[in-house]
Length: 492
View: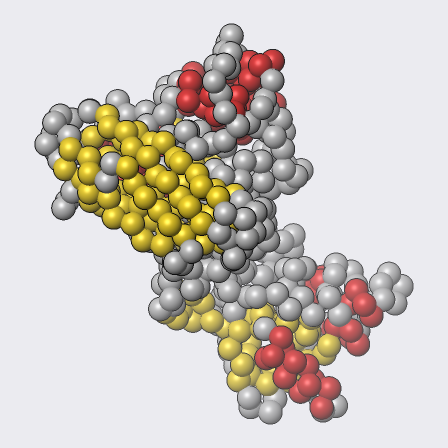
């Protein structure tokens, strides 16, 4: 990749090299941009080729959240990862000249040694030769008057400019207030802290209440986040923009405030003018959550080297820890099957397996022309005559159903599971769902195996009349040792 992004040709070439080298797992932490169909997206095309070679591709969900259908990398033959929090977050306090202390968020390594500095509002210090008060209040690059800002702590109306305007103007620090939710800490090239609208308004009122406002910014401190794990605001959400009934993202993993290796030639904050250089940094993004799952996938494959990409994906998804829709209102469209549990994934009990033919049939069911399918498969694949127009028969480890409001419906999903646990295991179906309007039946509701590797099929029948935008539940196959969990999501 380059400074202006990743070119399709380079992505495809990278996958080709990885496939040629015989890697076990491909981890690709990139995404975003406009939604493209499976046949137009380089990662979707390349990950299909990897799947044909027995390689699972693990990809980032993207950092475009929390809007609906913002997810990147949503093909069923790859594993898409959302970003969840860990139990550590960072707090940066600011003390004003009136002795009031406000607790904001940032990762501030600068030590002002409790020294106070004059404060100024960016909107009151425009660089009139190049900018207006509208741009200076946002502290855009070159928008601030250096003569007014130098040596002061400048109050800005957004965190989106990463402090570059304040840095270029010679500010001693910056305090930012933002209308968006601030649920994670960022790095800045100068002392900084970020506040929500309420605290930001109080700070703004203080600056305007005195002719000589002052403040100091303290170094960050680590605090416990008792609600973790939950999905962070920036993590891209579903539904899948191309095939909504393939629930995406698939799974979540730690992606916030992650201590990670860092290039020693890149500034800490990635902002030009930041002269701090380190070999480790604290990073947030689905680019951090993706490699957690990639490592777990490699861990599973080390125990089961002959398993297909779909089997490994299934093991990771069906053993994920359920997450709370009370914190993440988008529920499965935020966190997929749940939070990664590598230890359980190595011994899932059952797996939902799939291969190239299954994915070709899935594409056929979506109405794609044979010529397009062959562009993807690079062979003479054809569609079976009895292909239907749903995704209900793709052997996927989750169940998704899109419907219309207040219109009764019934959908039958067909699935096959492979026994990878005890040879004589007996699994019983347990169902849970969040509303009485949703009726779910499983037939048969008991699966009795006689050998490892044996495959048994079942149906899930979902009936309802939707009076909500989304309801969800889960099917859990339980043999007393393993709990093989698959989310069931019905949405409008």
